[in-house]
Length: 120
Image (cartoon, rainbow, N blue to C red; front, side, top):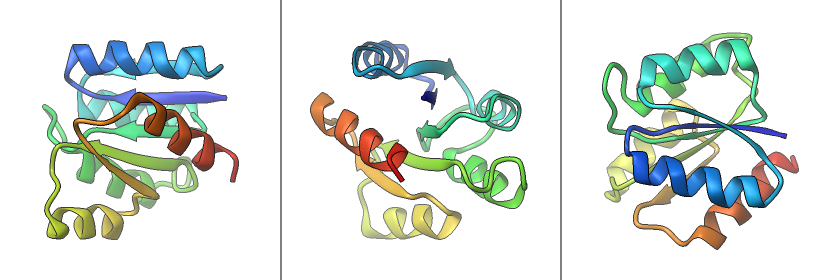
């Protein structure tokens, strides 16, 4: 299964590659929203782990664009962000996110949530 991680923080990119790779996923990484959206549309991953605050496009904008495009509307989206306010969480789910995790996070929880979303 392929997981696309769209995250501008290199340390979190590396951690996601390590954790998800060790769990058996093929991990692809993009560092900004525009590149992430392009990768989601062309590479058709099973899941996108999506940061909110990124250059070029926010994660919420990427999620909305994915849900509006027939090529990506059914790809699972896990928002992984430091934004923890209830209004932020509501905005992400309204944009089409399937799950939401707040940074900092436990590696085991990330892997568990990815497993749950890719099992659907």
